[in-house]
Image (cartoon, rainbow, N blue to C red; front, top):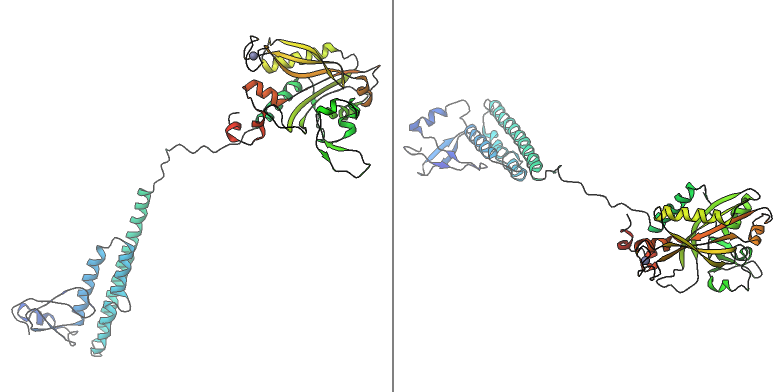
Length: 399
Ligand SMILES: [Zn+2]
């Protein structure tokens, strides 16, 4: 027996340290319970043999486990702790194998004690798990907090193409003057695109208006991409004759030509036509001057110059005073002080007839303009190729 000294001993399956109890300190008497039959023989630092009970070891394991548990701060260490004390190879499981050494009388009480310790450790483990989880959540809240005061990210919004914007501006102005929008096909027959507009096969104007042809069977009529929105004049007149018609015809047109800073193979036009009785050149002038003032501001100076188009007679070009230099001359107006924005004229009698009207009774005017040209003039754009390049650096400037 160990006498007069206190030693520290490590027990099988127990990661903790057991404080040796000596007889002269009342150790042996404290072991004198009904559960002290199974004695374990160990050696204290004084190399003297001491005996401790299973219950003593169990109490020590419980105390050590609870102390270790209270210091655990993360789930990984908690898992290790669980394995160390409550696992199949853990301290308690190993010690419980000693129960067989107890007498039949002592075994039930010892078993109850084991169960009580297991329950206590399970309960403490659950509590610690909850504690760690709560703290982990709180840490996440603190570290990954969303700052609701930060301004949001502005989504990238699409916008209308500059040609579409100007087209809509033009149609709005003419709508206020009672013009309806009339949509006409982009694929036309040679007859509608040329013949019915006074441009027969041998007409020199065809040299300027070559286009893309669609393959058709031999002998069939030529089908092509329209070179101008003017075929819409025939479509709209035939749909309304002999009643008055007042429409604008916006849309894409195509030309087979070399692409340069001034020419594209695809572009937009807005055509307009008004046919009825007693329509005169004054109506044409009033309409276009009103349009120019709406587009460039009240008091905008305009002038009409004689011109030629196969499908109008007489024909004119409409110029507006250069809004950049106010008529003094600049690079955009090529020092002339004027900008050409539209071609126009009185509808040719043959064209009226082709549209289903009697030139002896009906008369009308027609005009056409290019949204890209108007946009180029408004913004000083020097290359038409920008419009359909798909380059966002160009497009995003038009808000
Ligand atoms: Zn100018």
